[in-house]
Amino acid sequence: MNAEIGCMRPLMAILLPGVSLLAILLLPGKHQTLKRAVHIAGSLGAFGVVLSMLPGILDGNVYGMELIPIVELISIHLTVDALGFYFGLVLTFLWVLATVYSSGYIKHKDERFYGFMALCNSFLLGCAFSQNIFTYFVFYELMTLASFPLIIHEETDAARRAGIKYLKYAIPAGAVILFAILLHFFRGGGDLSLVSMGTLSLDAASRTLLTVVFLAYFGGFGVKAAIVPLEGWVPDAHPAAPAPASALLSGVILKAGAFGIIRVVVNVFGLDLFKELNLWIPMIVLASITIILGSVRALAQDNLKRRLAYSSVGQVSYILLGIALMSPLGVLGGIMHLAHHALMKGCLFFCSGIILKKTGKKNVSEMAGVGYSLPITMICFSICALAMMGTPLTVGFISKWLLGSGAVQADKPALIIVLLISALLSAFYYLPIIYTAFFRRPQEDSESQTFQFKGETSPAMLWPAVVLAVLVIVVGVWVTVPAFPHSLASMVVRVLFT
Image (cartoon, rainbow, N blue to C red; front, side, top):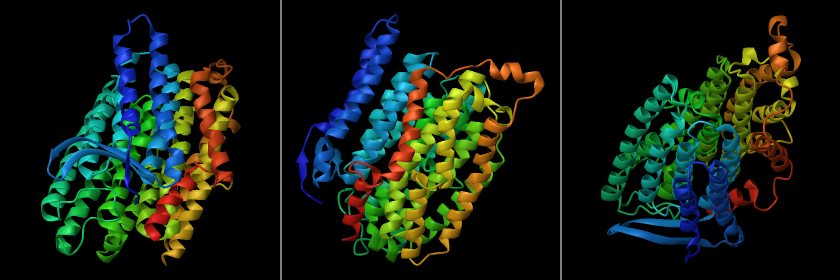
């Protein structure tokens, strides 16, 4: 890894959403349009600052700065390497679209929603740019607290129950991560940095201790990564949250848990030690179970957002499966899927929000004829649903192809069966949605109700979905374009395997 270049831009990116929050709070209540504009400007500014580091990252540079020294060997320190930049670019891009979308969707207590959305943006960027696992933990826990109000924003009984359930999972998970950090620091050698390819070794700790440390990290971060049996909060939180929050929960916040596990495997343990301790075995087993079980449970859901939530449970574990394969193509596929899933599932949740706002329909069984009243929305939905199945010329196909190739490269071809079963199950729970929307006419007694919603929704809600649907195809066809997921993920893979 190249020497760190002192740079204020990581801190600027983290602070910009917070600055927009202050402006929103200080502006008089009557200036709602201006507040929405400031909210969008804050997220757009953070994306712009992150994007400005792209040329340097592609040249192999590393940016960072120490913020707060805590005690000896522990500090709040920011570092932007290729992997952190990749996650930061994905999350800020999706955040810009979700911010625009929320300006058309959120009409109730929007200042509160914008405020906590801005805080989440800042804290997630802190996770992406963390130089050490302690810094990651601090921002990760702050993100947990800031995302709770997004889940309960609607203030219904279901939303409150979902929010409390989220905290019941997330707070103990944070305690488990803290236990892992303490064990890592005091018994594992004292190096918490995330800038090298492995800081732990068998010279500093026993196999048993290292295994306990890994399992604690894996379990703690596994709650947000929605690994079975720790995924119980996900199917309740997504339907309860507003659509822009659901898109961010699935597209980014679940990835914060997966990204934490990636950092632990790659930067804390390193692939050599990870392999020597056979830690890949429980990770592959649990990822495979989660992929299949999430898809099976999605089949049984009539509520659209709940079906999408269970789909996310299975899809996020594609990332972990790729890392656990420890082959160049497998790791490449896992890291790329972090961005690919954000594009697909972000669009699907945006579309579900449009359907709910325009028709009031929450369930798949009620969606007969929706494709006629909301054609652009349902075309976008269909593109991303087909991509989730692994249809060629989409990002979903690229992810599955690389993961399957990685399984063969790692001498684990049996895992291709898991990918095929998952693709088949995805078809079983996505195709009925498309069929119902486009090929089932509404019942006679409800036909007028269905077709009174002529025309699409507001541009603020429609265009973010359109942009993501277009990118699902563009990124799936022109895979190797600089700044697309492949170019950044391949940089990480080159460092790991050379």
